Length: 483
Image (tube, rainbow, N blue to C red; front, side):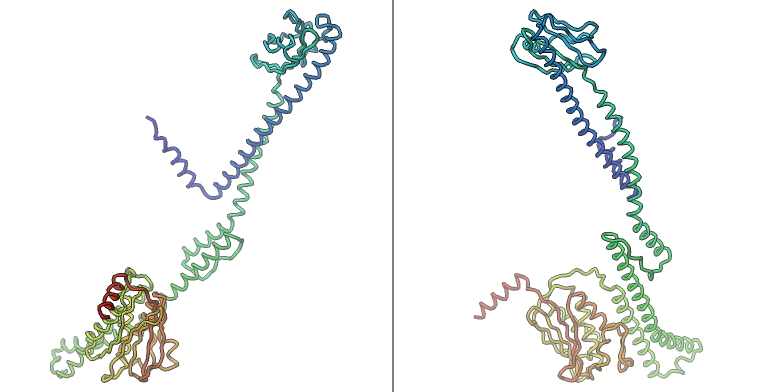
C-alpha cells in the first residue's frame, strides 16, 4: 500500500522541528560545508579536465607537426615511423590509397573516420577528434602531410581526474566532520547565554522568587532578550506587590465593618437565646441596631464591588464604542439619585461624543457624584457640568463642601486613602482610585481644584470624537429648519 506523497515531507518537517537549536545549527553548518565542497569539486574537476585536455591536444599538435615534416621530406610511404614506446603516444600514416601504416607492435587504433580521410585527401588541413567507443577512448589529431596525412593519438586518461576526485572526497568528508564539530562548538558558545537564561527562568518558575535579575551579558539579540525578560520579571514583581498590597489593604478595610457586623449579630443571637430580646432592647434601640446592620451590609457590598473593580485592573470584557458622554452623565446622575434620594444633582450638560466604554465611564461619574454627596450640604446641590473644549470633553463635578486640603490632594486618588476628616464617613477609599483608572484607560486626565463655592472641583478631561454621520446630518437638518 503506497503512502501519500505529502506524508514524508511533513514527517521530515516534524522531525526537524523537534530537534534542538544546537542540533539544527550543527546540521546546517555541516550541510553548508558539504554543499560548498561539492560545488568546489565540480568546478575544480571541470577546470582540471579542460586544462588536461588542452595540454594533451597541444602535445598532439606538436608531435604531429614533427611527424608531418618527416613525411613531407621522405614521403608518406617511406617515412620512418618511431617505434612504439609501450605506452603513451600512438602514430599512424594514412596513404593516398586509403591504407595505413603503424609502427610494429603498436596497438591498433580505431578505423580512420570519414573526416580524417577527407583531411588526407586535402579537404582540410587538420582535425582534432575524440573516440570514446572503446573502454579506452582516444584523442586523435590528423594533419595533412604530402599526398596523405599523419595521425598522432593518445589514450584519453581519466585517472588524474579520478585521483583528484577521490582526494576531494576525502577532503570533503574531513571538512564536513570538521564543520559539524565547529558548528557544534559555535552553537554551544553562541547559545550559552540562552542556556543560562533558560536555567534562570526554570529557577524562577520553581522557586517563585522574582527578585533576582538575570545577568545582562552578550550583545545584540541575546542582550535584548535578557533585558526583555528582566523587564517582564520586574512587571511581575510589581504586579505581585500590588496584589499583596491590595490584599492587605482589603483585609484592613474589611476588618472594621466585619467586626462591627459580627458584634451586632452576636448581640442579637445572645439576646434571642435568652429570650430577652424584646425586654432588653427597646423598639428604638432595635430599629437603630437594624439600621446599623443594614448600613454595615451595604458598606460591605459597596466595598466588595469596588474591590472587584480594582482587582480586575485594566482587564474588561466591555468593548469600546462611539458614545455621547452626555447620556452617560445623565444615567450616572439618575443612579445617584436612586441610591441616595436626599442628594440633589444639578446637570448642565451638552452633547459631546467620544470613543469609550460606557459602563466604566458611568461608574467613574457615579463615584465622583457619590464622593461629592458625602461633603455637600443638604441644601446645596451637586453641580455636574459637561462641555466641549476644542478636541476634548470636559466634565466637572462641583460640591459646596469644605473642599480637599492641600496636603491630601497628591494622594486623593490612591487606593484606600482617606483623609482624616473623611474617616468617620462611609466609604472604602477606592472610589476615586477607580475614577483615576478609568480616566487613564481612556487616555484622559483628572484634576482636583477648589470650586467657586469653596468645595472640591474634580475635573475630567477626555479626548472627544466626531459624532456619527447620521447625527451630523440630523443636526444640519434642524439648523436648516430653524433658519
